[in-house]
Amino acid sequence: MTRPTPEASGAPAAAPPPTAGRAIYRADLALLAITAIWGGTFLVVQAALKSASPLAFNAARFTLAGALLAAVYRRRLRRIPAAVWGASAVLGLLLAIGFGFQTVGLEYTTAAKSAFLTGLSVVLVPFFVALWWRRRLGGNAYAGAGLALLGIYFLAFARSLTGGWGPVNRGDLLTLFCAVAFAAQIAAQGEFAPRYGFARLAVLQVVFAAGFTWIGAAWLEPIHLAWAAPGLWAALGVTAVLATAVAFTTQAWAQQFTPASHTAIIFAAEPVFAWLASIALGVEALLTNQIVGALLVLGAILTIELQPFRRRRAAPHPQA
Image: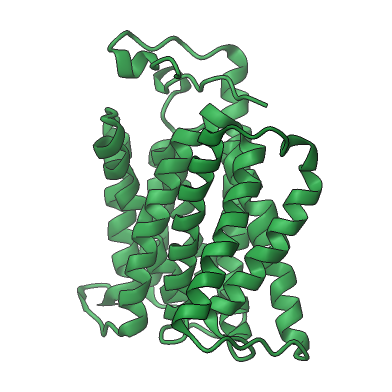
């Protein structure tokens, strides 16, 4: 049984040590880096779906990533407590659901719009945290979430700078379910990572995600993987190594030092990176309302980042 944090017990939170600020900054930069990676992979995954069915592609991606992570962290996978297995299963299921809805949705909507809708998870995380663990959130978390929501509206839904709703298709609706699953995963990992350490969670959640996705693929779709297609191997390499193995290890490590609501705000930059990648490759047009939306999302990040460290809760000491 873990000891309650000062925040949970009602006692005043202790001031973070001098090194806490540096740790949080490093965690923030790491989270921003993997956000850029994820933003750049929407187009990669969309192209790969020409050679693979959605869930089979995700299952192969998670399997390769899980094998790589298990090889790297094999020494930390001995005598794993039951609680870690349970936490990893929950995280893996949420990942499988989130990526499943997102990848299927990419068959019906654009890569940039999929990323923008996935970014709605930033609005949901504070509410998951507050509801599940009865945590008090600072006003800046809600202000940042509100700015992110407004920014995503202008990025994905507004017809123009003056507003008005554009068309919503099947892929958009599927991606909304993806946003809910990812929000739950961020909130849950924010609770589990400080308690159980990052390495075991990083490995096992990806392994569980692979298992759940293979089951879903066998049940819900005719499995198709065109192994002879070179583009498929390239996409699996990028998504399995960078966007899964490296990214989720980094996320699990970083969330030992920064709260879930803060992580969600940083992840709100993902649609901006996806949008920039689409523009650079000539896939998406540059519209004024999208520029405004991108600036609002960045403003949401700054709303969190400029909060003094003395007001943040001290992170629990990570376990090995």
